[in-house]
Length: 297
Ligand SMILES: [Zn+2]
Image (cartoon, rainbow, N blue to C red):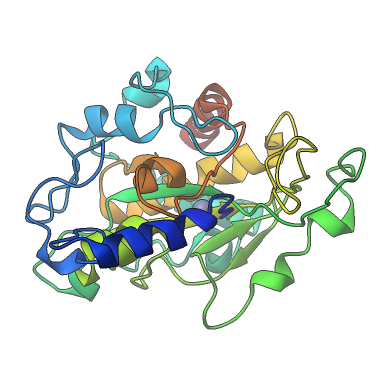
């Protein structure tokens, strides 16, 4: 969620106002592919097949939001799934959720309900295709010498995100507990790419998941920067719930969604966010593999 470069918005806006034909604030006229991963507004996809899209959208994010230029190296267990049919995942999940007493709201809604569709739930438009991973970047701990333990109430207060205007579909605290902002069936936008570049056509195409992650100030940076994230960035419980949410959303779609980092969607846009920080794709893949073994028993 973090936006350490907000000052750039003002600079870009000033430059934009001074320039004829500025594309930055003309989201509805975009016809060329948008951004480094080449989003096509006509087909509502990034460039390449599902796996190529994931490799672009999951490039490591450095502090401050700079993305690695090389495509992400994806674990085989994850690469084998992305874009592929889910098989009998839905009945497996249904049994698992019942046995674990996990309510629909804990996985973004009922497995029997459709996902949102692009173009603000237009029936003829594709169902949500992208599973967007965020970190909350709060609480901000300023110049604190260290981060609190992962079970500390201060880093697990999801109530602050609740409400009709919740910024994401789902929130996951450091213990793996959840708050539903919106059902995965609700078209909702949460990135600069969607709101400022693509426009309303994107509403419903992306599912947004926020993972609690505190931040601290980098003493070498500006007075209110939040460049320092904990290492490791996320807990085992967060990766486990991430895998479950990914499986639940994919079961509703019928094929495995394309995971994406918020920072990759916004790359190159003024005000781009820097999250998620210290994401470990191997731990996500391992959590997903473990979940699938459990589901298949
Ligand atoms: Zn974000």
